[in-house]
Amino acid sequence: MAEPRVGHIHFLNILPLTWSFAHGGNRGLHLVPGVPAELNRELLAGRLDVSGISSIIYAQGDESLVILPDICVRTDKAVTSILLVTKKPLEEIRDDRIILTAKSATSHCLLKIILKEGYDASPNYYVRHIVPQNPVPDDAAGSLFIGDDALWLYHHRREDLHYYDLGAEWHKLTGLGMVYSLWTANRTFARESPEKLQLVYERLVRGMAEGVANKYATIESVREEKDFTFQQLEEYLQVIHWDLKDEHLEGLELFYRKAHELNLINHVPKLCFADVKRI
Ligand SMILES: C=C(O[C@@H]1C=C(C(=O)O)C=C[C@H]1O)C(=O)O
Image 1 (tube, helix red, strand yellow):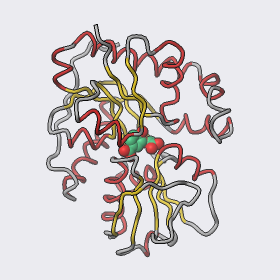
Image 2: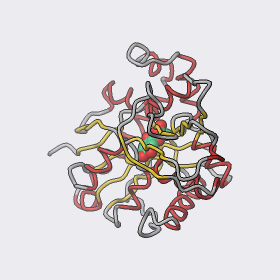
Image 3: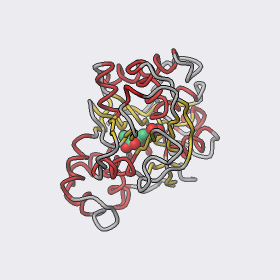
């Protein structure tokens, strides 16, 4: 039986799952690592069966995707790893040029909503490859980073720049938390391979729980390769949450409604969950 192809976002925000996968929790899965933008594209093209993806992509999937229950990447308020870095305060941004990281999809929409509704600003957005070592290129007023790049910037702030945490900004605007990433399956795969879908669901949910229960080991496992202290990573893993309960869907649904109002998606999607046996 061919192993299900599962996209895995290689960011520290799912470190517990990455650790579990590296310690045998990936049995029976064909993992494909990547940044969200790549995995979003691969899943929609049918080259992956299941993937962690940008939550906005579920809405762009025109009902071709179903959501795996119980697991996501979310925060209640601040996120610390989705950051807008600007040369001037946001209140002064008008038709300036803002660069959006090419790794993302959700944060692009989140930023557009926050700037329009919270700051009455509609700057000119450009998607481009950017690096944290040069946070705001000369030709731009600001840049949007996600993932480990953003977390690094959060801990290496420059006096002459302004930093905005989009999780905190979203909470300020709406009073709600935000779901950045969902695990979704292609609907055809879910219908034709229910056992494989069940296996993926169990590996994801159990793997995340196993990693969370081994916090010390998960953090130690990346200390050599990543430029963060133990304390920074420990704090980060308290900011990010991975459970997905009914109460968290309110923020996600509001995000879809606001994205639709700004014409960022064609329709407000109905949340359709995969039919798996919950564990
Ligand atoms: C919390 C984060 O959320 C990520 C942001 C994404 C996006 O903007 O498309 C996609 C997946 C998430 O892992 C992060 O960037 O650290």
